[in-house]
Structures are given as C-alpha cells and as structure tokens.
Image (cartoon, rainbow, N blue to C red; front, side, top):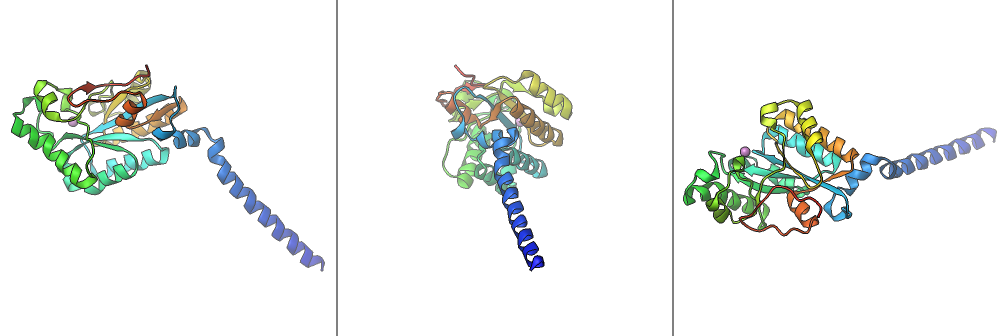
Length: 251
Ligand code: NI
C-alpha cells in the first residue's frame, strides 16, 4: 500500500513537471526580448513610431550563401528584399520561391549584370530588365517587381523604360570591398537611421554573417526589418514608376 501511494505521488510529480515545462515553453517568447521582436517584425504588426529598416541584397541568388541568409533571417523573423540576377534565378528558381513563401520581397537587378543600365539601347535594356521580369512573373505570379539599377546608375531612358519604381539605398556597406564581418557590422550600426535602405550582397559569406549580426544588434535597438515595399507602405508613400527612392524616414 505504501509503495503504491508512492507510485501515485511520483506520477503526479511527473505530470506537474511536464505541465510546468510546457508553460515555460509558451511563456518564453512573451518574456524574452529577442523573441518578441521577432514576432513583431511582420509589417502588419508594426505600430506607429517604430523604427523601420529595409535590408536589401543584390547579385543573388547564390547557392549556399543565399540559403544561409534565408535560414538566418527566418530564425530572426526579419524580412528583406532581394534584387536578383535573372540568369541565376533561372538556374535556381526554388530559391526565389522560398523568398516569397517566407515573406521577403524579390526585385530585379539585371539578367546577367553585364553593364550599367544607362549604357544600353532599348532592346538591350529589355533583355536585362524585361527578360528578368518575365521570368519572375512566370515563377512568382503577376506582381510589381521593383528595380535596383546596378551602381545606382539612372538616366531618363532608364526611368522611362524601367516600368517600375527604382530603388537606390541610403546605407552602403561596401561589403564587396570590405569582405570583413566586423567592419561591415560596424558600418551598419554607425550609419543606420530610421527608414534607411541598406545595400549588401548575398553572394559573399562575410556579407551574410554581417547582415545576421546586424539584425541581432538592431533588434536590440528596437529596429524592425521590413521589405522595401512594406517600408514605403508603412510610411504612406506611394512609389511611382520611373521615380527613384533611397530611404523612407518617418514624417
Ligand atoms: Ni550588382
């Protein structure tokens, strides 16, 4: 009898332990600062007065580095915008499908990054921008694909032919030249302000690592990572075709 009641008591103790563990699991996201920021990163949950920033990545998708970046952004709940190279999308269409499925934005860089858009005649411009738009539309459906002109080079022809808003940047990490995680993170943390668009490239391991470290540091500072379109929408700015945009601070 004594033994049996001991067994019952220990069964109750186990049940209580399991309940407590489950409670802690549910409570953790509510108590932990980082987890909470991750939850709130969705633009739909952005409250007025929040600091917003748009991370943008050019020249991808590129194999495992883009995958590592998507994994890291997913873990952190941060959204980003990818200005892709059409030829690389054709080689790896699942990567851009994943971007859209995970709440990121996909825009057009060029088809093969051969030269600045300002150097091109109409036919060659269409072979870079139009061809990439057609490919993305086939993969992702009909939607607005913002255009990031290489080197930020824009002239009247580019404005007229792009058939989309042109997205520049306000924080240039120069990651392609630095190739140094610490320096790139420092650059972002020193320069970033509310409404900024940060330029990086998801084709270098250093850039991917720096971007994820910067997300963690800026989450701590109360920043929320949204796509370029979400940033302008949240700020009440209707982007127009042929116009260029480099940041969207609160007004
Ligand atoms: Ni580029």
